[in-house]
Amino acid sequence: MFDRMLSGLMRQLEAVIGVILAIMVVLVFGNVVLRYGFNSGITISEEVSRYLFIWLTFIGAVIAVHEHAHLGVDSLVQALPRKDKLFCVVVSELLMLYTLGILFEGSWKQTVINMATKSPVAEVPLALIYMAGLFASVLMGILILRNLYKVLFIGALDQDLIMTVESEDLAGLDQATQLFLVKEDAAAIARAGSVQSERRT
Image (cartoon, rainbow, N blue to C red; front, side):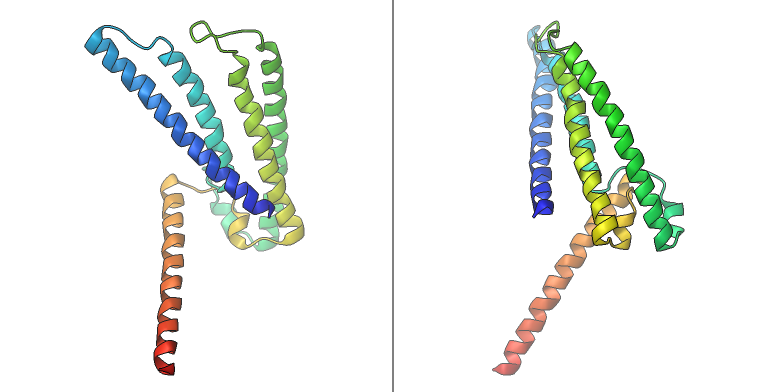
């Protein structure tokens, strides 16, 4: 149930990323058209786009943790026996939790400091920028704790012990392969069902 809730949250975050990208396109492209075509512009375009990009980056990092899509070198880990893979995963997860603790502490301090400070053009509190770090560190911490619990107490498959991918192309290829295999399995089940029904008739 908890995994389903997290998957649903990740889908919502992906939708939020889509909305942020759409707003950024409208602001930046619209500002260019207005500037060169009508000698005017959207005053808050540059500032708001910059802040949205910060949030976009942190939200994307959360989704990448959930999908184990952060880039890394995993050649050595893949060559290790299962017990050593488990050790590496636990150590790396604990190090990431420590790093997220530092990120949370720094973001919290900056949020408090900048609560009363407003941006020069849009006049939004600068604390909103640093809240992205708070948001991302909390969610990534939850995801990492879930992974640790799964590895230590439930048991994980070998592919769950590889926490990174060596290139974005490989990540996309892996997702496409998994989707293809699921479709092939569904087609094979449908064919087997139709053959059995024909035999009965």
